[in-house]
Figure 1 (spheres, helix red, strand yellow):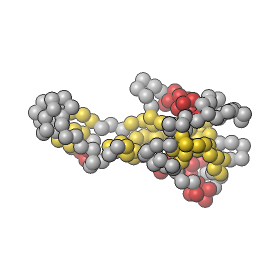
Figure 2 (cartoon, helix red, strand yellow):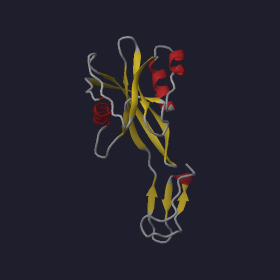
Figure 3 (cartoon, one colour):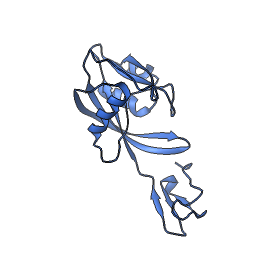
Figure 4 (tube, rainbow, N blue to C red):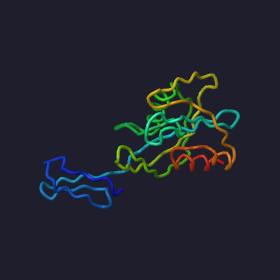
Length: 173
């Protein structure tokens, strides 16, 4: 995370802001301000149909625009993981989930606008109604695709945006 640097202290404006712990902490020797770059929580939903295909979104924006990801995103303040998963499903693919079950969690690196965020990606298996009409959020999702995911070879063929998603699918095999 070495590239996470500030030029000025957010508290006093000093140019003496120090980046410490490999970009995990910023400290101002002039006013004592300290800011920690803590791990962000994110959720992903593994939705599988009766043909053992997984629902994936083609990302409409950076990072990793054009690659595939699960419906999901960052957890909002004062939100539980399952509340975030349900909200992200509504926002990104326009439907409700009928059940949610924890699968796994993995660390991930999410670089956006030259800032490196370390995340803990938490994955859930979720069910949607077979007849659910999917209405994806165009600002986030370019299209929705279904990919076979029954074997390691199937998973390796999927152009996934994040390694944590690949590890999650491999966990399910």
